[in-house]
Image (cartoon, rainbow, N blue to C red; front, top):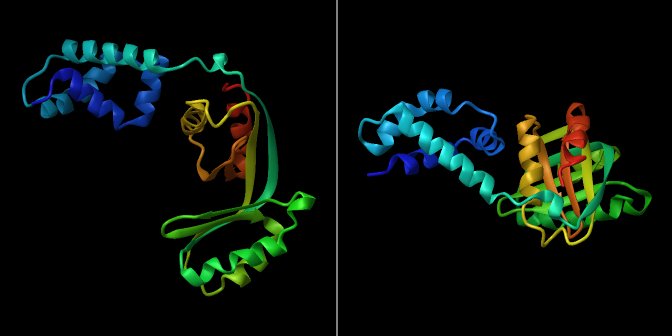
Length: 215
């Protein structure tokens, strides 16, 4: 049987936005305790007072804030770039499709600043490419099963100077900020010094603003 504290943690960790609000200290513990009281009682299997839930919420909030590392201590500096007119397509993975990816590389002129990102998952292939190559990609994979495709996207890239790869919390903080702004992300791409989010054009300025000062 769970304790009140354990039950509260379990319930809050299932709700990313509540977790974010608690870590920022911007919600009412009393109102939240009233909201989740029934669920806490179900988790613990006994009657629980609202004050006990409030106390558990306060303690968990303090724990969350103590876990966080100040991003200002990082030695990283960065700049942000944006590429517009991106086409994104996801396909069901097949062995014969993998051979065609080389053709995609052959068509895209990366040296001239065109955008290309290929991701091969366990079951899917993702291609994000400059919009002007849309028809070529569609033709190349005409017999593939398309999971989804999207036009007129923007790639927002954070380019780091410093040890981005070995700095914990950078990606999670960036993703958390975008989630807080209800920004839908189609692709997340990273290298040793770059972190890219492919988003809808209307969201691109919000992404830029959210990432401007997150370190």
